[in-house]
Length: 480
Ligand code: UDX
Image (cartoon, rainbow, N blue to C red; front, side):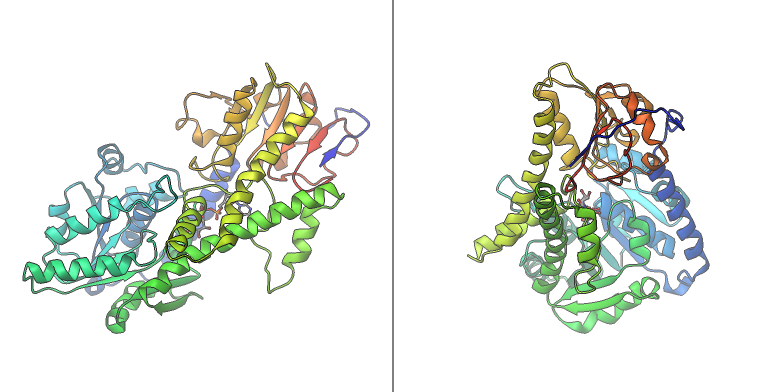
């Protein structure tokens, strides 16, 4: 947990004052760019294979899908009803950060990618495939708010003029795709419309920061559908993405809906479990990094998502776990393991805060340098961010906080933002909530500039021996 060592020599002092930009963003961007150049060489669709695709919702999944389908060569229409977001998109700017997203948006905008607020105009284009990508935020009771979904389905029904496949990408509670399908079939029958709408559910597994690569090289494509008839059309559409090793699974609606919840829950509960083991290890002089590596070397377990730290955040894990718990409870089914993962996740950040409060009994007037605000490094997404929670708690204890997270600067204005990481080292102590690449270029001696020579590392960024020989107190997670 803590290392306090001898000699306070200032040697090889190379601070990061010039590191104005986070390397994580630039290196992710370079990786994404290289990936796209490579992908360029492979075949995009031929003229006679070009389909018309309508994407409803210009959020994370919708916008990434829109630019990527445009890159594949299809003609894409993106429907966005939020005027501010629409304006940004029409100007060729993504409303959030994702490597290469802006580049793809400007490359295809007004060529084979068109953004509109007008659902009727979009449906006039007679799309072959309509992707439903609207948000399903959490209600206060944990259930998913489906108002955007139903509004979009209703608008779609009102304006649809040609047979097509409606692909639901929004994360839907189990049973919802069947209800959407029922609604649409009844609507068509009522209106005596002689067109066929096939509804399918295709869960989305994009991970922020790697979304473009995830789109073009998915591990798996999952389709939930009522009858297998339209499967070949979906396979054909996804063929350019299936060239590598991706597996294609088809199943019924409910199974596909459960695949999404189970995938996110499985990952989240690994994190909560390793965090609890980390807390145990800390008490008995164990080392969670060594434990994770050894445990993860078992191929039945695997090594990913075993990094202990502040816990998980983001737009998916907390929301989807809560929706899973809520949906199961309605059917009187226990998913207590998922509940425990959520509870453990909240406890984890509290335990970390307690570590700081145990060391500094009174934070009044303490100057804290705080690194990382987003829910994970490589994004600017603040949703459910454990870092943001921690900043708020520390501030409420009277601390003065100086934050460094360049991508989040514009998003959260009521905090004091540093221009450089170097400024954080001029504070009393440092809290690290994100593992930025640039941290690994900094010499350990640089941290001696902190007035209290004390670091709380919520992401285990440094080896436990990194500060050996220096009078630095180093507190991390799950290590003595
Ligand atoms: C996740 C899923 O990975 C993705 O498949 C799904 O489509 C959406 O939700 P994302 O939210 O982008 O993606 O983030 P992810 O990389 O999975 O990380 C989620 C949270 O877990 C972050 O706060 C991250 O810091 C934390 N995490 C991750 C850990 O604490 N330890 C780990 O070992 C891995």
